[in-house]
Image 1 (cartoon, protein in one colour):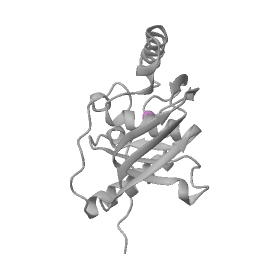
Image 2 (image 1 turned 45 degrees about the vertical axis):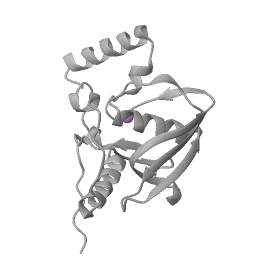
Image 3 (image 1 turned 45 degrees about the horizontal axis):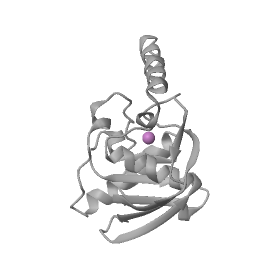
Image 4 (image 1 turned 180 degrees about the vertical axis):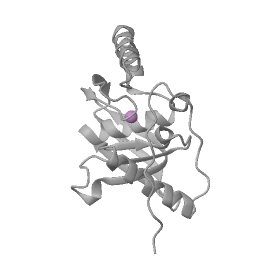
Length: 174
Ligand code: NI
């Protein structure tokens, strides 16, 4: 019998775990495989297409992505200790984050990236992505470095976002 899945709550900005550099994963055991399944379940429950472990208060280099949200099985990717090994081009698109609900801003990203990572068994693999997948890979790997998409905005735009969040907090809506 499989263990019951656990939905983790997604922490919101400005929780300090989101600004911390996550630790490298060294143990590729059943606990890791279980955590990855819980991350997928938590991501789907929050209606997201990407989730990084720091967002559930676990400061480890783990992220899960599914840009088609269960439509295409091959889009479901778990990346352990991912690094961007190559990038090309430029895209500017609107981005959001489960840790920054209601905030959406245009962010400049590479148009294409190649990422090297390990799977839950510790085997190294590579994934290449463009458009939405390239964006998701860069966004989620940023989380593992303690970087949020709003950190890529101009000072002026970031100040406006911070002001909006303060207002939401004041109204008890954050
Ligand atoms: Ni995010």
